[in-house]
Every structure is written in structure tokens, then in C-alpha cells.
Image (cartoon, rainbow, N blue to C red; front, side):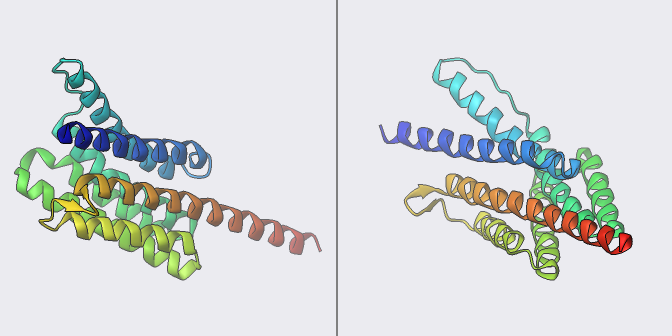
Length: 209
């Protein structure tokens, strides 16, 4: 029974993260395609993992997600969000360098061992969260700061050897933290977009005057 509860909590945490990322993707892709793609990639892996768990409960051994595909999604998703934050703040040079570097890393995945891939994925996630934090601090975006701190906490906990946190499996706690981080980042992108629109309207009004 305990095993079933554990599996149920895992499915629920996957669905929570997936739902949050999908809703964030639908609400931000018109603001910036990079942000929409970043949220969408974060939703793919938990969705496929939930589908795998569901078919396993039916006695079917269908696997919907491959380790390589999950790794690429993990490596590219957060840098895409960082790309959007830098682009919207006007720092397009850093945005392009960040995205280009991550795409090169993802392209070389076939040449690395699994241990190296784990370190690279963890490092990329931390770097992306830090860059979003820096942009959010300089632009005064409280939601961006909160999202970065939540993602950073998830990254730090992921590197520990703990298996349980708050009476829940560590993986489920990390999913909940990332769901909250993505919600905060969605609000941050929307706020940043509104500020850009207000600045454009003000500049236009000054020009007309």
C-alpha cells in the first residue's frame, strides 16, 4: 500500500509540474517564443513519465521517454527561459551567447558518459537560474527573483543524498518546487512585457508631444 501511495504521489507531482509548465507556455509564447518553448520542454518529460506510469499500472511495459531525450529537454529548457529574460531586458548579446552555448552542449551529448551528463545538466540549470536572478535583480522583477530562488533551492536539494524531504520522496518535492518556480517566472515574464509596453507607449507619447 505504501508503494502505491508513493507511486500516486509521483504521478501527482509530475502532473502538477506538467500542468504548470503547459499553462505557462500557452500564456507566454506570444510574448516571447523562447519562453514558451522553455516552459513546453519542461512539461514534456513529466507528461511522458506520467504516461509511462499509467501504462505500467495497466500491466503494459510501454516507455514513452528516452534518457537522451529527457537529458536534452533538461539542458535546453531553462536556458531558453534565461534567453527570454535577457532578450526582453535588451541584453540580446548575452541571450544569443547563452542559447548558442547550450545548443552546442546539447549537440555533443553523444560523446559524454552518463556521469558527465548529470553534472552538465545540473550545472546548466544552476547557471540559467543565476542569470535569470541577475536580470531580475537589475530590472526589479520580484517574481523573477522568487522563481530563481525556488529553482536554485531545487538544484541544491537535487545534489544532496537525501531520499525523503518533508515526508515525501525528494523527486516529488523537487517537482513541486519547480512548479512554483515556473509559475513565478511566468508572472515575471508577463510583468516584464507589461513594463516594456508601458515604456513604448510613454516614448510614443513623448515623441508625439
